[in-house]
Length: 75
Image (cartoon, rainbow, N blue to C red; front, side, top):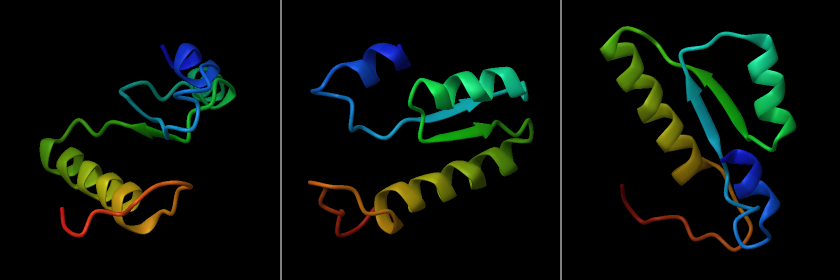
């Protein structure tokens, strides 16, 4: 799916965050090689997982600047 998303000009600029339970170096390299913008190993603890997701959302929606992208006024 990532390969298809990144190879289509209409969707290639969409940032992709891979969230996985795998800590495999091979899978991480593959994801980045296919165009992933971030690779996060999912925490097994729900509280830690929730905090990680909140940080990811905060970064991608409020901190990071993307071309042709308007930041939301609020979350």
